[in-house]
Length: 447
Image (cartoon, rainbow, N blue to C red):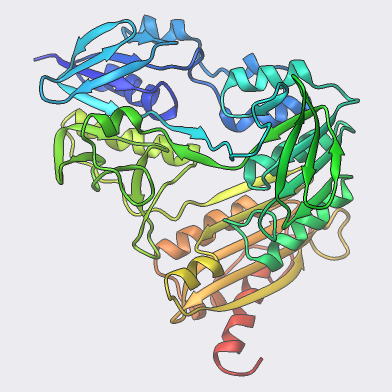
């Protein structure tokens, strides 16, 4: 019999599940989204602001008509008001719809810190395509911009606008940039690069108020008041779970929906065979710590969507614990990490020994060689974390180290790791080997 599948959320998880089901199963598929756009790349938005990508519509991977032609009943700009799990109905702005199976893929919403004046005009977040369009309209090369928050989005936005010559101040309340993904020593390389690009970086600094009458005119910190034309708030995301919570979905310590390895949703302590969740609103598990986490990567969302789609199509599939490998592009510099940081290790009482190295991305005599900084974290000789900062070759090393981590690689195995070599692309001994050697020496008390 044809299954009725309702999907709440038209992002990477929702639309990937929808298209998978139309291709591989006999399903009537309804998709609801409060967004006015769908199937676009959120990760590409900072680079539209930079001008590398000409305009925000270029980030749309597929127009809505493509999904409608596939037979997907797509309801954009539509709020889901209630889920009646007992009668299996979705109550939305566009009507009441019955379902056999439900997928909750509502994603996240920007966290807006309780700063006086944060609701003034020309204070923006960068989360949806509409957000990006609003920023683009209100910014020009003479604008003075303050970015609040030096996580991945904040850094990419600040670096992108700085490359246009715009006056940028980046403010972070914690003592370092990229506090969730890098150790302080590795973050310092990123901060130095941002400063070299003309960005004023203020770490360990809180914003006390955003000032102005109707539009923002200045931002006050404990030290000074900065004249400003535009403020971009990038202080993190929170799972969007209001409708799921009201429907009886269990919410975990991360603030996201509790799921099992098949991404089935828990309600009143029981996993439901007909309700699934994935993406930034779903709680999964970390491979190293075993603790619940939220994986915010677009690549993770696509993998979760595949797991949900296959389960709905009758093929039992699991979503394994995650390592969440990620990279941030800050102008000419790339910072990547996979596994845990030293801070996470401390929180979970994991004793670690680290090894670091500074090498180059090419042979020293070859033109264009860029510094390459690597830090590896080991627990009981097993690789549990890796951080890489350089102008090139970062993603490839992070991906390889993530695979090594998933396979349980130990320090001696990394020392025996055979790496390819050619002067235009590598040093004869890769910096990964040098970092592993540093860690091994510390383990043996040599260094």
